[in-house]
Amino acid sequence: MKSSSSVSRILHLDQLNQEKKLPPDEYQMKMKILKNRIRDLTFLSKEKERPILFVFEGWDAAGKGGAIRRLTQEIDPRLFEVHNISAPNAEEIQHHYLWRFWNRIPKKGHIGIFDRSYYGRVLVERVEGFATETEWSRAYEEIALFEEQLISFGTIVIKFWLHIDSNEQLLRFESRKNDPLKRWKLTEEDWRNREKWPLYEEAANQMFQKTDSPKAPWFLIPANDKYFARTKVLETVVAKLQEELS
Image (cartoon, rainbow, N blue to C red; front, side, top):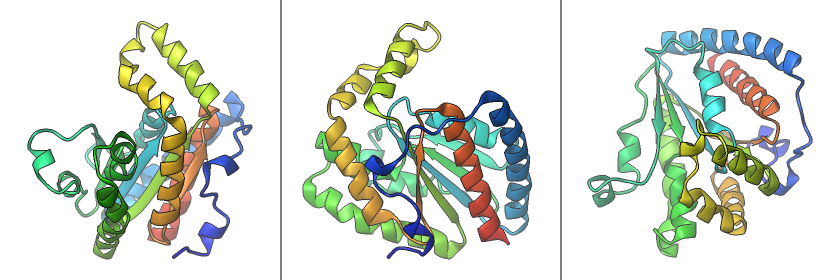
């Protein structure tokens, strides 16, 4: 089921306009206003005992970490926790794949941020064969029910996909490779994932269609221009929190 607002949102990667840019001076001005507004809204969510869950997905080098840093810069550090999700460990892999995410769900009035998330089941686990077709096909409904339970508890769920095109990703990979301070960010796995771009794109588009909902919408962010992407993420957060907390 789609909300009325989702009609105007883009839920297919090919439809995003990557030409959108933001000048540095306008970026600085907007970010200061948005960060202050987010700080106030997170204090309001604390007062109203509403948990907030942010989900960040997207291509390698799309700028998820940078967007998360700007999002949290003015939030009281006692209120949020960032979870950088990687492959499950030996204990986690013995449980249902959602088990390790239940253990990281924010409590009342607090904020949880997933840098990668339970959507890995229908992305990397699907593409790389870590889950069978039966398992990842079943996961769409499992994830929808998981989010419905969070929302029934009062959790505000906001999901982002940061999208860059293949050429921009290659430029960022080469930049990281040649920068001693950023070289650690680039792994062989990043290059392998890049080779399967069409498969990941197909999986992502199907994921948006099957897991977008009125209360847990997907927001696809054009991210070739980092200034535009970061600003768009924060603008979306402000709008969604204002809607939920008004």
